Image 1 (cartoon, rainbow, N blue to C red):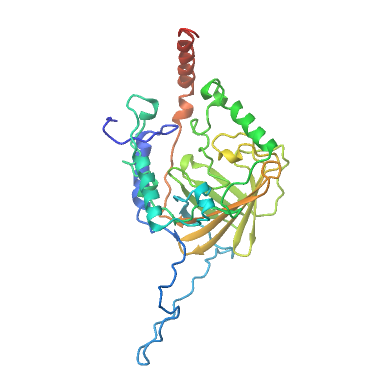
Image 2 (image 1 turned 90 degrees about the horizontal axis):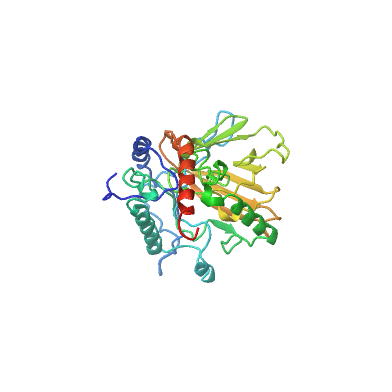
Length: 372
């Protein structure tokens, strides 16, 4: 790639062939209309909240047909399809907005936020550096600004506590987080194969696609398929898959663990409720606040259709050994056009031998420097 093109710093590299494939996906899904979460507009001064009655001779318009939650052949609310949770809303409310009790950005503030993020996506890397060895991120339409995203003008996705902030951690939770993070950062992450972040090895994306299903940097697209007894959620990046049984089977003992936890689901009216436990302790790629989770960490997710092209996603974190109280966040998912193309990330695994050889060569070179 020539140095005059825009570049984007990434933690791992995809082949240009895959980027070209994803360009096709971006062009297809880029035709969608995003969902919107904005504050209600107040009535203009001097106007009545009630519309004037039509003239007696005018024909009354036909009443709009109310939207009804679609259902599968089994009678369950239908969440199937292709979706994205891309958004520019922050997870936590900024301290200044907490002080001002500011729940929504103004239109001008929101537009500026989107513009600033788009400029960051287009930022150039330094020629000759590791981060510069990558395909052009924006050229292939992978940044959020060129794809559907929810126009969520809230100043935080966190809804509880009311200040929009992640609650304080216990002393025990802080220590667990520090110890785990330090254990996986030895020698810059290349002292042994196990230190290499899972995303660089193309095993699972960093951060994992859920739970919780937080917005990603790019390729933040999902496919949901339902049967009577299970729900499958496919995440585009690296093709990570969650299988959520709905047949009331018990969770395995805590000795059985998984990076994305082990989920069990059930329906409460029109809401799909998913309870996930049995997360492993590896902190790589998680939100920093979740690095110190205990063995008893529990995540509750709620998915409910809110319109023809939207559903609401809410999750609650519960772990008294890590947080002083539970906390909840929510965000909209917006329908996109499918299909989702495979993001075939393999080079991180294929290149492990050369990566480790390079790391040892760097160690040897550093040892020869004066004072080493």
